[in-house]
Every structure is written in C-alpha cells, then in structure tokens.
Image 1 (cartoon, chains in turn orange, yellow):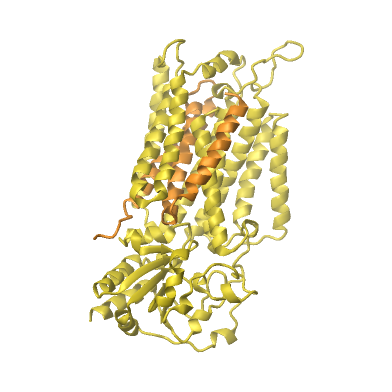
Image 2 (cartoon, chains in turn red, cyan; image 1 turned 90 degrees about the horizontal axis):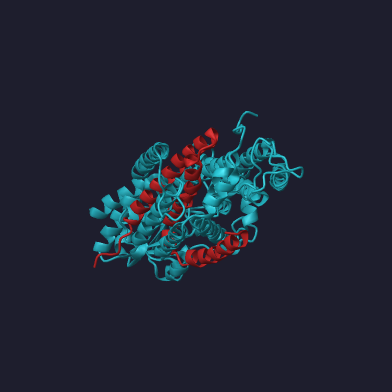
Length: 93
Length: 515
C-alpha cells in the first residue's frame, strides 16, 4: 500500500471515530477508556513481527517484551471492561 | 555502539519487500475485519444494553489481528495461502505464545482483583504499557528494518558499491513515522506513570511547579520535533536515542505540574496519545487494523478531553499548562469560615429524608475515597421502599476519570436508569425536597454561576440551591474543593452540614432510618 492510501484510511477512520465516540453514552465513559485501551494494544502486531523476525537478536527481545506488555493490556483491558459492563443493570420491574 | 550491530552481510532486502508485498489478500481482509470489529466495539457502548456484545466484538477483532500476524510470519510459498513453518519457526512461535500467556495471566489477574475505585490508576497504568510497547516496537523496527519491510530497495551508493552503514537504509518516510511513534509512545509512557503515581496516591496530587517550566517544556518539544525531522536525513543511533530520551523527559515534565482535579483531562489525553502512537506504528507497518484503531482511540481520547474541559469551563491549554489548584487550602481566610452554618445529625437527616418525596443524590470523588457507594445504595433502596423517589445526578468531571461515578454506582447495583447526567436533571432541583451531596463540592458551588473572580466561574454546576433542603456530607468544615474556593452552599439557610466520613455518616443515616 502506498502512503496516500494509508493516509486515506487513517483520515476516514478519524471521522468514523469522531461520530462513534460522540454516540457513546456518558455513563459508559470509563468502560470506553478501558476498551479503547485494550484495542490500542493492537500494537502487538508490530511486537509480533519483531519477535518473529530473524536477523537481530536485540529486535527479537524488544519484540518479545512488547508482546508481554501488549498482552497484559489486551487481556487486562478486555477483562476489566467486561467486568464493568456486567455491573450495569436496568431497574427490575 | 555495539547495539544493533548488523550481520556483516546484511540479508538482501529485496526478497523481504517481496514477501511483504506478496501477502495473500485474505491477510489484508483479516486486518480490515479486525478494524471494523473495533469500530463495532465502540459502537456497542452507545447503550449499556449493547455494550457487552460490543466488547466481545473487540475481543474477536484482537484475536483475528494476532492470529493473522502470527500465521504470516513464516514465509508463504508463492501461490499458497498458508505458510509452511520450519522447526525453527515453531520454536519462535512457542516463545511468542509463552510471552502472550505471561501477559495474559498478569492482565487477567489484575483485572479481576482491582477495586472499582482504583479504576483511574489502572487505566493510567495500562496506558503506560501501550506507550512503552510502542517505543519497543519502534526501536525493534529501527534495529531490524528488513523484518518490517521498510528498507530502501536500492542498497547501492552513487558509485555502485554496497552501502557499508551499520544498518540497512530505512525509508525516510518510515523513519518519520517511526520517530513520531517512538516520541508519542515515550510521552504516553512517562506521562501515564506520573498520572498513575498521582492517582494511586503514591505521589502528592498537588501540582509541582518548576521555575521556567514553560520555557523548558517548549524547548524540549521543539527539540523532539527537530530531531524527528533530522532523523529523516540521518538514521544514526544517537538521533533516535536522544529523541527517545527527550520524549520520556517531556512526558514526565508535562504531567508533573497538573493537579489532581485535572486528572480526568490528563487520563483522557493520555488515552488519546496511546491511540496516536498505535496509528504511527500502523503507518510504519502499513497495517489497516492498527491505523483504524489508532484513529478510533486517538479521537476517543481527544473527545473525552474536550468533554471534560467543557464541563470545567477551562481551555485545554490551561489544563496542560498546569498549576490549577496549587493554592488549594490557602484561599480560605478566617472571615469566610466564620460565617454561620448549621450542623445536622444522622437522625435529623433520616427524619427529613423519610418525609421527602423527591431526593436527588450527588456523588463525588469523596464517595469513591470513602467507598460509600454500597451503603448509599442501601439508603436509596430503603427510601424507595418508603415511597421516596430517589435519583442520582452525575457531573461530567465528578471523580478522577470520565464516567467514574457511573461505574461505582453500577458496582453498587444502582440501576443505570436512575442515574442522570447534569443537563438532564438540573431542572428537577426546584421540585426536589432533598439534594443529598456526598463527596462532591466544586460541582455544586454557585460561585461558578455568580462570582466572576472565581477560578471555577462558568463551569456548569448543579442548582442545589433550588432544593428545599440540602444535605452536605463533608469530612470537616476546614477543607475546600480541589479548586480551592469556598462554597456558599455551606452557609445557606436550608443547608444541613453532615460532618464525618461519608461511609460512616450514611451508615448512621441508614440505622436511623430503620428505627
């Protein structure tokens, strides 16, 4: 992919983000932060590439540490979001 | 300078570039699907009813992204869809899975054990991990650019000789993306660490003001930008090392002067940064899932920061400049605290609450500190059984992060349809018999409406002065809110001050109600 197509995806995604986030109910702003935190750990993709590549010992280790850090975030982020969301209950009628 | 010493004959970059370009279409579609699932995850949060499904979409998206990346790391033979791993590849895969498992255990245990009141510092800690991961990925890409497919294809100089630099020449645009990713990641990391320490109470929440801090910060920021630009022309190790060090430093310097009350803005801002860091790395890797996520998270944090600033009537710049609340406690002069006020007992409060028709509860950070949410819900349940109409009113900046109070009330099993936002409930105070303020202060201060000299002037506040009776639970009369301003509500005729620990006071009220 060339730079311009990537930039297009990025700019359009910013607009999607803008409208999607404004539609989030304020009561769920804390879960929103927790889940955005979890999904921003998609940076693990880069860590995986580094950890799997041959050719640089240092890069492999940096990658592996990155994988651990991002995994903490992914599992911790989604788990804590799920825990919070499970608490939101409607009035029993 | 041994770091990253290259193999003497660097592997020819061309096959790598081909490998990247020759990814089968399903790989690109998989990353796109992951990006779409992440959008749906946020979309689900538009209502509590759909939110859990949204969270599962997010997990599926992450699973797709991770599996796809792992599956494509072994070379895919031309024409084949799936890779053919060698034993060596499988050994690497095992290493990686072990790393993921280690992270998973730490993450899940932390998520299970954390108290809901500690959510702000947990989120700050998680942000720091994303930031650090971005720095590590950036450095790994610098040390092993072939693996990331970002080397300049032609490795020859003008003379036609092989370039004898330590590292293969990295594409200048990729260097820019990499430099930005590392810088934003490092700022996110050190900034979040400070935010974590302040939120967890391991460091004073009071702003720490260095002399000349604006000059130092601005200079450091300019140096970072300059180095990032220079990195495009010179990929020497010192450039990226200095860049990283300065970015760590500025993250630290930026958050140090910001006081506890402004933490909701800081946490949101760091949330935004962690997104931009992921996006920058996505540009380096040409990865759709990362770019989409980065944009989503980046805008999410930015919007939350904006909402928080608006709810405090402060500009983003003034929050970032810091120092707010530095004089807290110093402003109250004796003449002000000497004004007459009425002290009530738990029994008085219980009596009035039982007689009331409409009660509006306003929780604030003090409720979180005292862990009073559960007993507060018991009080609400008791009153509801007595036929009292109980509602909860939440200010956007109540607590230490956006939506903090909502989570705590949800934890205490308060139904979310009894919890209202500021603009939805503010008109109802005129009909309220009791406004029950627990652990909040600045968000009910009428000075925000009347006193132009007040630091909180213009901030939208609850019109508690319109309620027939105001009950104000507060530790003591001496302290003031984070903004360091006195509150006229204390001295109103209809106000009853309930002095003491929030949890104990509500427990006593519940006891008195049961008699």
